[in-house]
Image 1: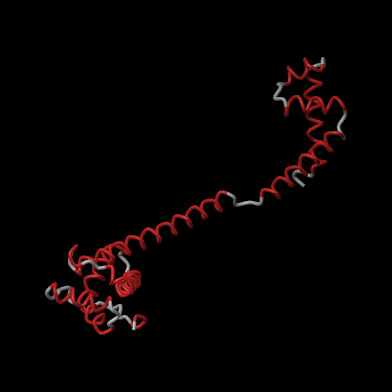
Image 2: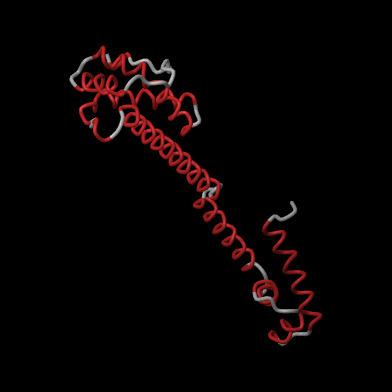
Length: 198
């Protein structure tokens, strides 16, 4: 019987007298399927309304309404008439289930968002980037070793240590004009060795 529960709200939202609803609930607790069908007609509309106001999605509302009605069928024996009306008890279950669905759905969206941001922050293969960088550095070192000592020292001081031409000239105890020429010649040889601009 439970698998065939109707999920489209047929009830108008109005309820009969509470003693009749209480009686239905007691019969449902005893496993009376006809009583459950009658109770369904009374509570399905209000349940769907509460759920739909919380989840704001018709498909989710139908799914949660089905879950609520199945829970009512399975847990009817827990209903205590002295603690409130039948409809209030059922709608409490409906509201709790709807809030759970919203939280679950939001948690899934948050997980997807975090995963998407992590993927976005790593758009390249770090191992490949590191390997390429190491190969480029090795190639530059090989090309530097092909320069004369004065060219190499001048280029390293100027471009790796940030020295000005006069500072390089002072460190190497060489005329500034000579340093400029050695740096220019060294950069041309580096360019040719690295294949830049070819």
